[in-house]
Image (cartoon, rainbow, N blue to C red; front, side, top):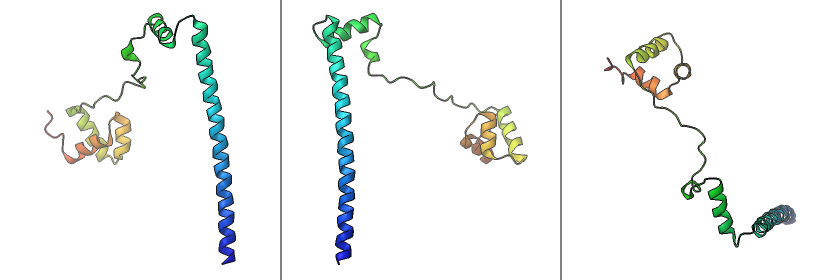
Amino acid sequence: MAKNINTEIKRLELEAAKLEKQRLSLLKQQDKEEKQLKKLDSIVERSGYKNAKQLIEALMVRNKIAPSQLNKKAAKGTGRTRTTVTAKLRDKIRASLKSGMTKTAIGEKFGISYLVVRGVENGKYDKLA
């Protein structure tokens, strides 16, 4: 029974050390955020505008930023384009399948998804002229 108590005490001490480490990390983060806020406040004060809103509006006019652009996230890319399966592409995929190529390799070769290759294999695109 004493063994269980000792192991529990050690576990609690480890937990307390973890909590202290987390507390210090949070305090450091809080200080960093406070410094950033003070920096922003000083920028507004030195700008010559009455408040932050006027400064922001002036910056938006200067940089030609519309209010509608503020809530939009930056586009990372144009997205994928939908595959148009033609009879010619279907026949190439079938030939690759017959040669023993894997569906994944075929998809990479032609720039199409695994599901399109599987659709060709299952006859989904048989009606194409």
